[in-house]
Amino acid sequence: MARKPKPTPEPQWEDLKGGPWEPTFGGILSFLRRPYSRDLTGVDVAITGVPYDSATTGRPGTRLGPRAIRAASVGLSELKAFPWGFDLFGTLNAVDYGDCAVNHHLPETVVPAIEAHAARVLEAGAQLLTFGGDHFISYPLLKAHAAKHGPVALLQFDSHCDTWPALGGAATAFDHGSMFLRAGTEGLIDLKHSMQVGLRTHNDSAHGFEILTAPWLHRNGVDATIAAIKARVGEAKVYISFDIDFLDPAYAPGTGTPVPGGPSSWQALAILRGLGDLNLIGMDIVEVSPPYDHAEITALAAATFAHDYLCLLAVKKGAKGAPVGRM
Image (cartoon, rainbow, N blue to C red):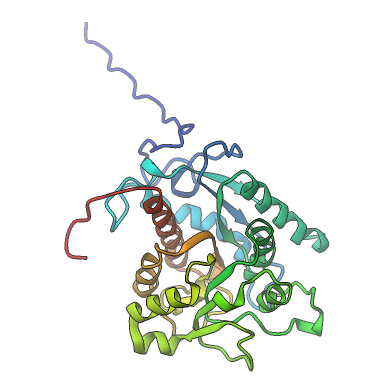
């Protein structure tokens, strides 16, 4: 009688280290196939979403961003991390913490809810990697980080400054174009070490930031941009806020306020990969709007930036790999 083949074991997702392989067309839709968990014991990074877009001034849809970024990330979980050549989660302990519960119908609860959500993670000793949502979510996230670390250096990749006066003149307005002016006024940001990169819209004042415009970046290149960032930030604790409209619309069509003339995906990746020496304390990636995306172009870019940020943290924790080919 023929022997019956042994059944293949079902994947197990409880272990923080590594993870079983599943095809990219199936399986769970957590970010990079990490375990979904609210248990932060031994966790280095909690990946979370804030599906909120009621502060947008243009095209809505970014509340669907966290889901799209997670879905686009599955291909990045198949192989060792490029270009480092290591198993990212052989060193770095990360979980998908799920999404922050935001009640769009009670605006007065939004900032406290996001701040408390972030604070729970930070108080447990983990870093936060957050997916928006519109860019306003960075304000309560900065509140939580400043409460833990003191005023933080903000490294903002964006086509917009987001330091305009709030619509209607109200300092407490829900406006994704004014929250960094508000954060700077409230002392959440260490402005002397903060920088905005990629801007290509006008404001009459820099409000204390050093600004590298998109034309400057194009003229001077990736290496000069990295050097300027390092010179400005120095050893300060730095929080990265990455608005996907930093990229030219050719590389990120799925966003609410696209602005032509921006960097390409490769330029953005090269800059981010050059920032591993900074004292990184957290990152958000915002303004991915799936209704305006094509073939997951924008979501995939956001997922890759998030993946590479985690790789920078893994290197700090001792991850070593074997890159192949000329880099």
